[in-house]
Each structure stands twice: as C-alpha cells, then as structure tokens.
Image 1: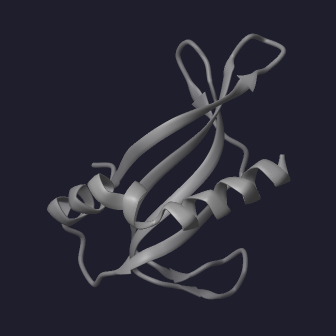
Image 2: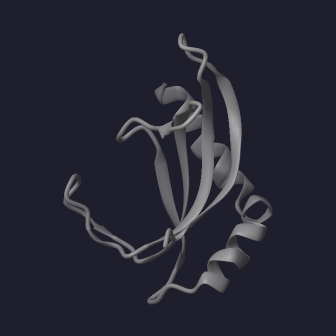
Length: 109
C-alpha cells in the first residue's frame, strides 16, 4: 500500500523523445529516522513533496535528489483518513510553502 496521494502534476514541457515533463506535488507519510545521505534525523509524519518527473506511455521516471520535501504534520502513526484530510486542504493551507518549493525545483533544473 502506497502511503502517498498525488495532489497535481504541473506541465513543464516535453523532452526530445516527446515525453511529458511535469512537476508533481504529493502528500505522503514517512517513517522518519536517520537520513543516510545527510546523516540527519528526519521527522516521522506527513510530508509535502515537489518532484520533477517524466511521464511516458507506460512509465513515470524521476532523477534522484532532484525534488524537495517538507514535514507539515508530525505524527507517531499512519492514518489513511488523516492523509486524505491533509491532501484535501494542502493547497490552501500551505500555498506559500508549495510556491517556495516549486521555485526551488525549477531553479535546480
């Protein structure tokens, strides 16, 4: 069971093969713990993530380390209802954060 809900895909052009490039915004639950790439502790809870992706006929791909994520609600346990509630209101409640994350991702690529 995937613990993520796609909020929306923002079109970002096409590549040389004609596949669509998008920036995906999604809300997910993460267990947290030590991040082995940074060595830092990450929080357990619900995250908003912004990730550039390529969507083809039968696949979706992304490049590692090209997106950003931010914990918006700390939680000790996963709840599908809580994830759905957050997904419904995330665009209104966290619009400034989403815009900053989108700007960051666009500047990286």
